[in-house]
Structures are given as structure tokens and as C-alpha cells.
Length: 74
Image 1 (cartoon, rainbow, N blue to C red):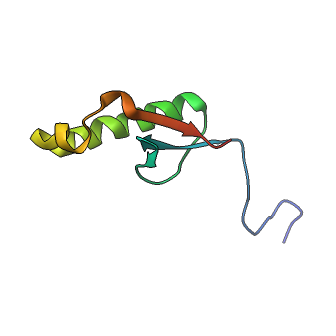
Image 2 (image 1 turned 90 degrees about the vertical axis):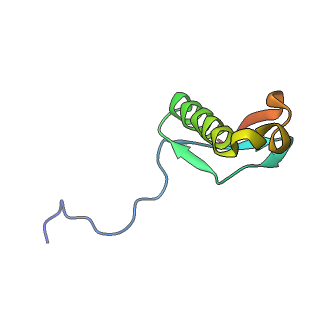
């Protein structure tokens, strides 16, 4: 083994974490991205997908379009 060989797991890194909430309730898992901009884009896309997946029932499942929020954890 040379001095440049490394084994193990790298812990940490420079990333941003957050999750999507609707009316104060979490809607999915914590998401990690390399930047805040990528995190916002990914979670915004998740909102669009969740709304599209509801189809005609969206007004019953998510009646308040302004109740969505992204919460950042770091």
C-alpha cells in the first residue's frame, strides 16, 4: 500500500440539506444537494410532481397552494 492509498468512508462534506413541508407537516425525506440553489430546484420539482401525481384530487389533498415551504437544516 502506498502513502496515497486510502480506505474507509468519507464523512461530511460541503452540502446543503432540507425538506419539503405542507401546512407544517413534512412531505418526504431529507434531501441533500451540493448548493442551496440545487436544493431549492429539487424540492420545487418535488412539489410539482406531488401535485401532478394527485391529478383531479389535488384540491382535496393540497387545497392551500401557499402552504408549501422548504426548510433548510444547515
